Amino acid sequence: MFCIGTTAQAAETFPARSIRMVVPFSAGGAADIIGRLMGVRMSEALGQSVVVDTRPGGGTVLGSEIVARAAPDGYTTGMLATALAVNAGLLAKAPYDPMKDFSPITLAVDTPLIVVVPASLPVKTLPDLIAMAKTKTHAVTFGSSGQGTSGHLATELLSYRTGIKMLHIPYKGAGQALIDLLGAQIQMVCTSTLPALPHVRSGQLRGLAVTTAARTRAAPDIPTVAEAASLPGYRASTWYALFAPARTPAAVINTLHRSATQALKSASVIEQLMGQGGDPIGNTPDDLRQFLQTEIDVWTKVIRQAGIKPNT
Image (tube, rainbow, N blue to C red):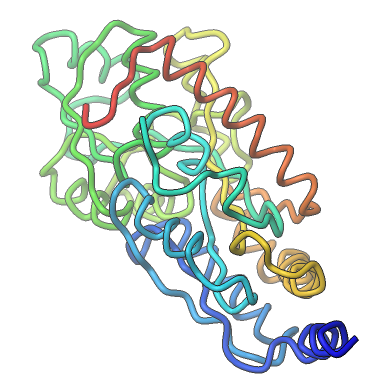
């Protein structure tokens, strides 16, 4: 009886201190942007600060493991992404199980990826880029936010479907990849619209295509990969979801879920996310669990079909 009372009291007083939101990407990327937007609103709802902690490395494995190994008390959460599902099929052995070592909270945002090149690169369309890549093996270098992340996998799928070869340069986050792209140190990046569209709108980068089935409302003049490159059925997106360590008490998950979904319903958050191509979701923990399993199944199949290996 004493244990039950203590547990109930702990759940009722949560949170009693600040909450860490681990982002397994470098600062400036989409996950960081989403985490900070949501963190402000979640802090207001919870009455405690939600502090974003960027921990890039290992294709999101480093930051994800921090979340998986943290105490299951609600004070460590993670804004994890598509790579959580991708790595299940890509890595022979990961230091965590995506379905067993995390407690789902909510799917936060789904965004298209966008293929961007420096404005100085002499290509105007996606077919132009494909033609450049066919001219000479590895003539095109592309950056991603890490090995096995959605941008990497989407580009490898594009290469597989078009029969081209490009040299992959993995970074610790989209922010660093975009910096080198802006300096024309690499030729292409496929990343979330959130960090990329501002540079497209400023004229520094050129958007060639988005990876979703339909054009994004944030940039309706940019075609999809499927239509631009005549690749029917090509589709990829990147999503960001909030997780806690496995075995986090249900009452704590409910509190975090309530604050997260309130944040995603905030008019200012919706405006900022949708203006950059993001689609706020805010589903239930059970919905997120089912979604994650589906994503693992889908991407594992793609990885096997395309013959994608780690460190390629």
